[in-house]
Amino acid sequence: MRSQAIRAATPLRQRVLGQPTLPFRLYSTSSRKSPRLTPGAKALRAAPTIPFLGALFSSKGNAEESGAMSYPDQRSEDQWRAVLSPEQFRVLREKGTERPGTGEYDSHYPSKGVYTCAGCNAPLYTADHKFKSGCGWPAYFDSIPGAVKRHVDNTLGMKRTEIVCSNCGGHLGHVFEGEGYPTPTDERHCVNSVSLRFTEDADAASKGSNEKAKA
Image (cartoon, rainbow, N blue to C red; front, side):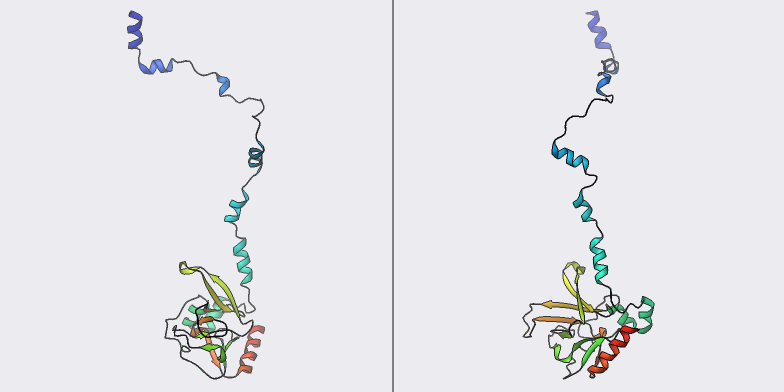
């Protein structure tokens, strides 16, 4: 009875500390061989990285996109500011958009002539390409071959196709397909008027484009 009373009076902490410890060999490192690994475990252990995770953060796609945006006219930002109005710079070089229904060429339907890039004067569209869309911006169902480049635009939470001048990369607007307009291509090049200039002399436009490219 006395031994039981003493044991009951022993503080809990002392009883816990008095418990025998586990053998040291379970915690020490050993020179024994590691457990045999399965082929799958060996492959994971040998791989320093997981390839598909690296691909998620790779800049390869950005590098390819940058390479695709190389244009003959490589003027600097300061050089563009010197020749463009603030509104032209905002739209052409900073990918802005003019308000609908306010552009100079929204209701402009000449019988002949050429629309050129307001930045580098490269010919982009002919008068024959223009049609009435009612969208609030100049609309063209096609462009002069090779004059316009297309790029995927993921801004504003949607996927659109941006169109730019193939000579200087100036932002023109966006192209839309399958809207049902009675045109040969069923496309609508929705272009900012401020990105364009118009001339009735197609030869003069072509000459101006060549001179800009050589500058």
